[in-house]
Image (cartoon, rainbow, N blue to C red; front, top):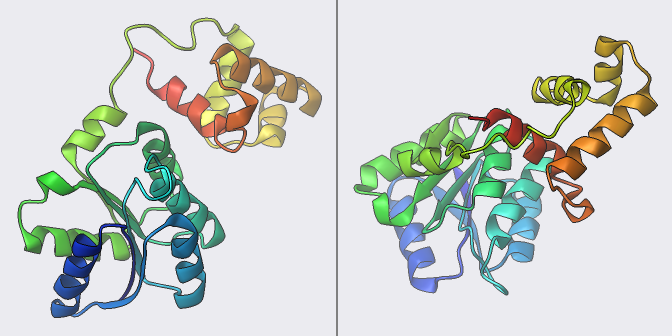
Length: 214
């Protein structure tokens, strides 16, 4: 099984390589930053990738964002995020794309090598492996309903977005025009405080707001 690792800590990356090699995996590339990881995925076509959330240069969310981009380029690419941090926004998007082959483990909570290897194999086979603490943070519900400001029609549109319908599908279901749906979606984004800077993720974030209602 071919593996690409995105990890800037040299000691940890080398340790993972030795561990996985001993367990029968083939580590085909180790990338220290997000651009190198994306290149390695395209070049080596791995069976699974291991990615840290925070990578150079800013050590914020470069790794998990690169994992999402890699899965867009190669739909269904199995990715195991291994980090000290839970990045809620992008972790939610990674898990919610519905394709499977996703894992999110916290480094400090991996108790045994056998558990980690088993998790990696399950992710590579298309399964989902989540640390309970990650699940807890993703499912934390706000004290107020983030969709309270929406009109009844906007709530209908958002509910259909949560079902996975695109704008044309929503228009057909509600028997309204595509332009009307486009306007409702824009209003939803505005009322939920989702700025145009998040344009690539606003639909997912809106759905997560809908699902996280108290």
